[in-house]
Image 1 (cartoon, helix red, strand yellow):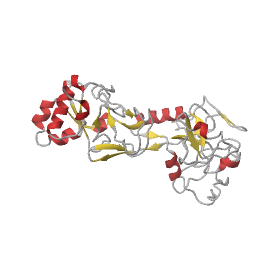
Image 2: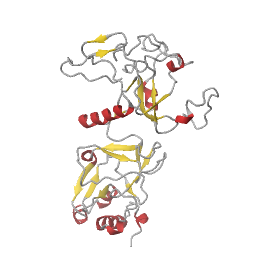
Image 3: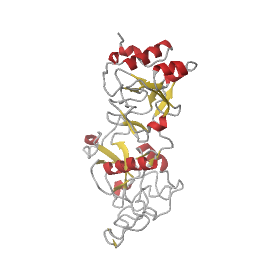
Image 4: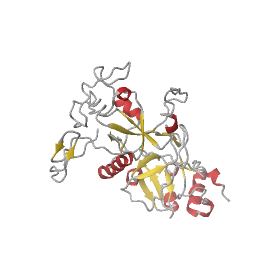
Length: 342
């Protein structure tokens, strides 16, 4: 669970109040209580400061790192014991994140204290669901992208909400006993993307507006070739490889991607499903988000727009036409047939 990172000195300007206690100085080991928008903003800020990818966990990730022993969870009922968990109004307020010892996986506060915000929208686990007839309005009206999930319970959770299987939703602007922890990506490539042959394919479903992957230009660009002529002159012996893993810019420069990049095999399309990047105007050390322009299903190829405009007429762009013509000559697939050259 994320607690506030301590400064060099404890603050003397702010105090902290729980239900029955008042701290003259602000303690830094209590969980922060925020809404979804604030948590994701912090993740973006930390990603920029640390030059790594930080994000909220998915529901599947929350489940995977939270396996605990039988003395905390009765796996038959899912009910959480309050022996080593701040739950069921045990303290009537949050407690320090490290109040209890961590799990065997080194996770503090996997359960209780504050609800943990996730990046997963509230949706049924399976398509074939059965809603209890006494509470039909709790779930189905909120299966949409306006409501975000939280799991784990809080210090206020009682009854069924103390079950590890209890799935709760909130509007993204709500603030109600919710905190968060962050996932640190081991590289800049989102793992729901994979290279197969000469394409990049989705391993999960994305909705319009979702971040498909995030990267720094300086981390994905291997080299910049000044023009098509320079490419043909200098890279004559491996020109096909360069074409397979590159894209042209607006002024004719050729941007070649590293083989560790998630866009190594990214193809252009006249009907793209993610946004493009204006490579010649971005800050190479700032993170760029590739955003889904339409719903993307598992197994769909990731294809990009050119110059940020769906339906862009490449017939009027000499640099793109030269690039596609060269791809044709060396039998490199960049979806040239979809551009209908004249």
